[in-house]
Image (cartoon, rainbow, N blue to C red):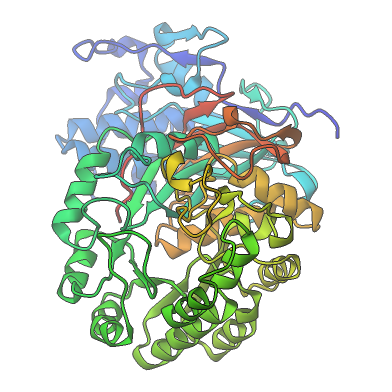
Length: 587
């Protein structure tokens, strides 16, 4: 592929901060900025038009910011007005940035060192009111991928303009002035920041397993910019508002990426469900089978019927671990004397029927209570037909699967290798290919990691026993290259990856208005991804707490070169620049 001068990022020079008590002399500002116009209650575009006077669009926004200041508005109102002005002039704002800065504050311009990242420079002095320096991004969409950007033509480069930590617009190269200095990303693709709607962070209470600091670092290294944390494996489990607040306190100041908390539905917290919704959870998770850990109880049909009216009233999704206990218990009894070092023994202990019967139950309850149903980590392809029929019927059902179900197959799992244990289990090669077809057909909506780490000793690797080992696979740092390796081999595109791993999970977690796409008004979250680079997975690629993984030694394609959160670089070339910038995403 040809080299491109258009695939670039960010101004090559920055703005020096001024002391807060030091103002810019009026003589250094454009004439229109010196005066305060009247008619504040007129429509925004008419008011700004009064300042035209030959100024560049950014100078107009500066003047509008000055206007807001002189009207003695609150800082929040000032910010709102500046953002409206920037939206009104979004393209021209980006195009005229350098000219406007030069005309307004020539003393504040100085070259940045070549190794200084743009994200460290903010416009902290008058008249920018805390807006981040706008930056410009161009990229050639690889393999016909539109990557969720509306109105982008294929087979050519496109430029995305960012300011104030949000995407302003997407334009073609011929609309972009050649005198704007930008940084070239070479042949890399630019993807939206990934969203993982199924992660076990385990804090508070079990930070020896994982924790917000290590999980979010691993996420940033893997191209994720938002995680949605499951309500179990932490202590206390997130089944009450007080437990939710404890989790929020634990996360404070630790996160490299944004996060959200699922609430839990357990046997005895029906009266807590609507309070959790009011407190800000985007949905709920329940288990129909024992979760393998104390502190979070499974629910039976009777308990579900007590909870579902509350869930339905919230309008939020119920995420279901869909295995019923009876088929698992019956199979385990039959296998009591079997060799549990063999993977086939474990596979037989979690039969397809456990998933199928659980999904049948949940679809029946969905018809009755009309709640939003989401099936997590679908492992059996035998449920695809009933899920397809349920969607055709109009039931509010969505489905996810995981990278390990799409990458591994039971035929290739060695005996005694308990790192591969998860529930539901990894099934056969034919089953795997049918899951890929489920993605192609749209029956499966998204791919989430089900990142479920634990201390290495809990995997019982020395015992080689699938019966006693913890069931869970950690994959945050490697999920994107794993998925791209297998998707590319099946003729999928990066656009499909973005839909499954960014847009779909964002929709499930109700953050799709700001996360999961590169589009106007969305957070400036994106991943610089080299889809052609190949590597062998090693411990150096794992950034979570315990660097164990069944993916070690796998030949993978696709490397995350950098990850940006709201315009700030949070991961680049193996490093994590700057302090933790993540925060809880709340509507």
